[in-house]
Each structure stands twice: as structure tokens, then as C-alpha cells.
Length: 118
Image 1 (cartoon, rainbow, N blue to C red):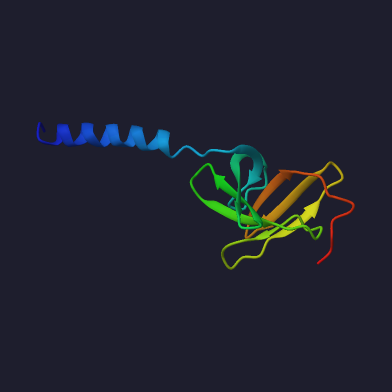
Image 2: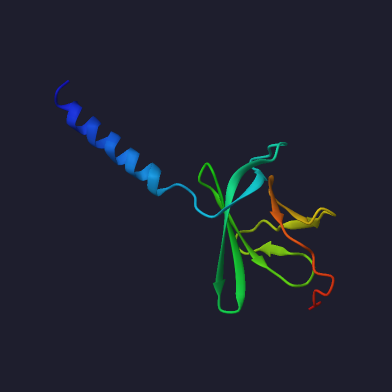
């Protein structure tokens, strides 16, 4: 039993460190992931730019993530990675609801009346 104790203590210390480092960062948004019907404030979104493009990376509380590219054609965002396409719908309350393969996200945003078309 004594041989396993140091290994167990090391594992416990490493787990505690990794939890603090792995905590999602960014603004909190409401999401319903994994087919959930209920939206909860459990996703975190980070903005980034690559060249002239702007991206939103949404991280799930459980560790998954999705990346979207912001577009100016009235849709709001499109999928930036993966095979699953995103569908987006604007609400009258200024919320962009985006769905991808059973995951849904609510981005607080405003639809521009003068958004340029491609």
C-alpha cells in the first residue's frame, strides 16, 4: 500500500493543476449541447482574427469546442471547421441562435440593416 501512495499523491496534484489550467476562458454565452433542450450559461466564446477574417471559438464546459467564422452577408456566422454546417437564425431580441449537429448557441448580437451582400 505504501508504494502506491506517492503515485496517488502525484496524480492528485497533477489533476488539481490541470483543472485550473483547463478552465475555459472568454465571455459566457447560453448553449444547449449534446441535444439538450435547455439553454444554460455554460459555454465560453473567444474572438480572434486571422488576416482579414474574424473567428469565434466556443468552448463547452465539458471540453468540446466549435469554431465559427463571422460573415457580413446577414447570416452572422458560418462553420469554420469540420463537416457539419451551421444554421443561424436571428431573433427580434437581438440574439443569433446557431445550430450545429445537435449543439445550439445563443450569441448576443444585432443584425445590421445595412449588411453588405456578397
